[in-house]
Length: 206
Image (cartoon, rainbow, N blue to C red; front, side, top):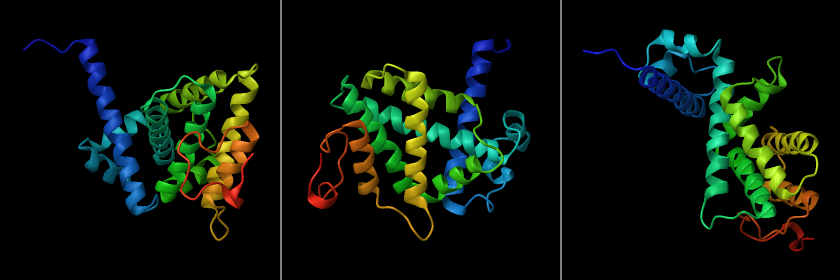
């Protein structure tokens, strides 16, 4: 049997890594962070326990990469869905809705993710985070920013703040209200993106 080529080995490594990331999203969503072990993740992914440590230095780093992958895939799907649009305002609206939707649909996962970022670990510069950043930077550029290097971090901070506000224990902010604030901040019409049922808060917008 001839040895596998470098490209085949690279594809196998990529698939193994993605299985670990997907398993992390599933298990933390189901059980929570503390109740999920690296062994559990390896078992769910059908991988050897040592493979987790090969790719990731610890569970927090693994979780951040897993959530950044989920965010990247969710944002990519939102931006590419039919009808496709090259309009920067529509794409920014879709991006905002996609991120707020993650907080709504995956509250335990996103709350755990934000807690890790706000702790000592901070942002982890993994490939998944870089892909997410590229999509958001492109969205800001298409929106018409004259200074993407300044406006992209601001958008990222506003989205992170909105996610925290949605998930704040005991005092959550309603998603539609946060959406309205972000849309007003960027001059977006309420009907762009995927507007929630019931119309804008207060019945007016603009």
